[in-house]
Length: 293
Image 1 (tube, rainbow, N blue to C red):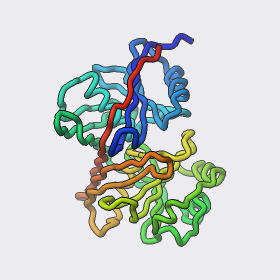
Image 2: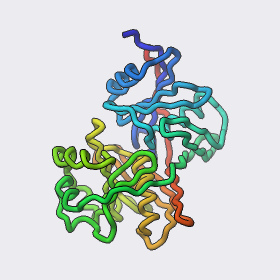
Image 3: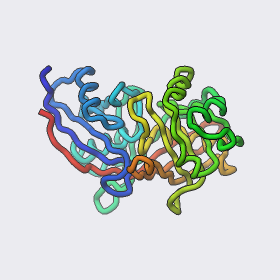
Image 4: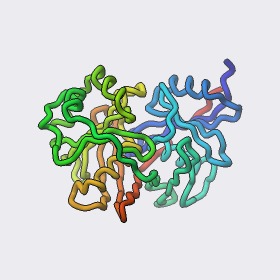
C-alpha cells in the first residue's frame, strides 16, 4: 500500500502545561486517503484518538480510535480546531465550525498574549437514555454497591457520544476502581454506551469541583486521560439532576491522574425551559509536528 503524504501534529489537550492532558495526533494529507488507510494509521499511532482533516477549506474532520471510527469525540474536536487555527487560518478567529460525522460543532477561542488561552466547544443538546442497575455497575467496577451515591441515577447520557454516568461517594473509592473487563464487555453488549464515566465530589487539587475517570476498553483503550465528550455528558447530567441544588454549573474537573496524564477540563451547562446547553473547554498545546512520507 502506498503511504499517503501527510503532515501530522501532536497536540496535548485539556493540559495545564505541555506534556500533560490527553495526547492527540492530527493529520493533514495532501494525497487522497481511504478509510482503511486512516484506520491503519490510527492503529499505528495508538493514541486514544487520531483525527484526519480531509478538507482544509470546509474543515471536514474524521476521528478514529485504534479500533474504530467515531462520529464525535471531545478532545479531538478541540485539538483539531487548534491545528486549523494555528496552521491553516493563522489568525485570531473567534469561532471555527468543524464538520464531523455527527454534524457541525462550533469551537470558540479565547486569546491571551496572542495565543489561544482557552478553547471551548459547544456540544449537541443531551439525550438521557437507559438507567443502569447499580448491582451490575458495582460488579464491573469491583466496588461495593454502597460506594455508589444512591441520590442520583446511573444513566446513559449522550451529547453526540454516549456514556454511562456513575456517581461515587469518595475519592478513595474512585482511585481504587479496577474494571473487570469481562463483566464490562458483557454490560456494554446491552447498552448503547460503550464507555463508563465515574465521578466524585472530592478532588486532589483545590479549586477543582470533581474528580473523574473514564473507561473505554471497548475502543482499545483501557482508560482515557481526558474526555471532552464524556465530560459534556456529565455536565448535562449534573444540570439535569441539580447535583449542587441548581440547574446551572460552571466547574473545573480533574482527570487522568491514574494514567500519569493529569488533565483539567472546564464544564458549563444550564437548563432553561427543559433544554440543556453544554460547553466543554480547556487548554491545548501543539507539542510536535512532522511528516508521514
